Length: 249
Ligand SMILES: Nc1ncnc2c1ncn2[C@@H]1O[C@H](COP(=O)(O)OP(=O)(O)OP(=O)(O)O)[C@@H](O)[C@H]1O
Ligand SMILES: [Mg+2]
Image (tube, rainbow, N blue to C red; front, side, top):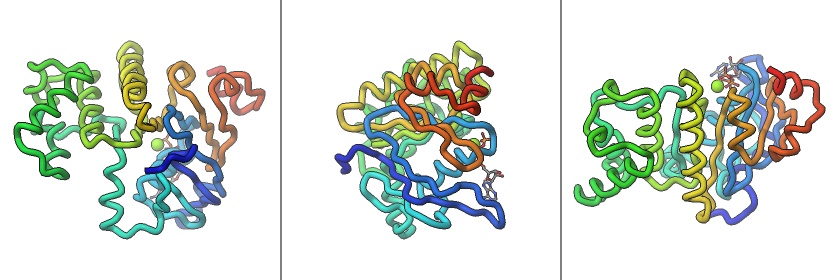
């Protein structure tokens, strides 16, 4: 595994869909062992950038390097193995509706490991406990859980394979402010618990206030370009007019 400064590096990365250039010659690294938030207005290219990290979209030009692997050189089979490095939590928790919390979290373990039923039960219950889901809620269906609890289950499932990198694409949209903070607390706790092994969290967000409170680094994107990439304290003092506008919203 990578021991370098960066978990992810973009080198001269450009992406064009049809005739629109969506990402413009990006060159930067995402710090290993930290929380980095990618901020920007709608359509800035944040999700497209995240898809490049997972090898879901090939670059038009340049390279994406994740944990010392050049992602865009991997074949389909290698990509499948490579994606085990990641846990993902998306906007709508994206749980399987027909499976209980327990079975949702067990799913990746059944799919990707040879763990016994006993080992799976122990791991799933530990994960659910660490994300604040009670034993009773473990056997409920997603429809019987609150939005905040579904996020917790989604996070537990994302952590099941002990990923090196967690990717969160707008994990709090649609949640009330209290639940939003609870989810951010949980993301920060998860980061802290796993930090010693170089665990990295990458969050896409619109939520400027939570972002400033919980992140180590901010990447601010506008129209496919990185306007600023700074530690939070320096970001808050940025005099860039685009960022001031965003901060004053
Ligand atoms: N597969 C695709 N084909 C064509 N255009 C695409 C494709 N994926 C994304 N785009 C375009 O790329 C631009 C950036 O999209 P992207 O989803 O990365 O933005 P975003 O920053 O995540 O926005 P949001 O905050 O709304 O989620 C948009 O103009 C979008 O329409
Ligand atoms: Mg998006």
